Length: 140
Image 1 (cartoon, rainbow, N blue to C red):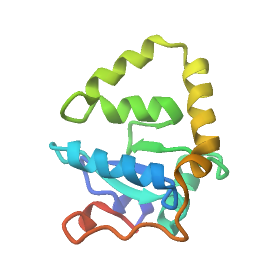
Image 2 (cartoon, rainbow, N blue to C red; image 1 turned 60 degrees about the vertical axis):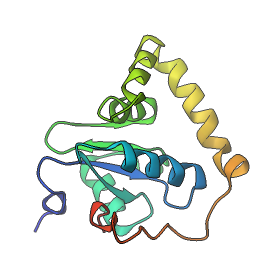
Image 3 (tube, rainbow, N blue to C red; image 1 turned 60 degrees about the horizontal axis):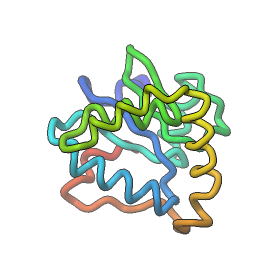
Image 4 (tube, one colour; image 1 turned 120 degrees about the vertical axis):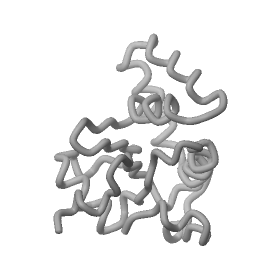
């Protein structure tokens, strides 16, 4: 069985920093706003996450959010955030307006926040353990 076969068909995979408090809060918001059940999740630190990163050819030192749409494309940094937001319910699709900002500027801001996320929001000793009701959305 290929690593890609572990991703349910018609799902997109969000890889995130599983020990980052800010990232954890963000993923919880995505889960709540994912009314169309588009996404599944894995931490970057998990064996599965590392295998996917290797499979799609992303630099293994990337500690950014990654959105992987199997057979279509993958997105990192601000592009990933915008692509995720446009598929959520509520006000989140409005965040697509960020595309008018040059990618280099968007990613500079993204990297600044990413660089400081542990200092500002803290860090866990280990990845979160999802509740029973959302556990099926997490791949390992």
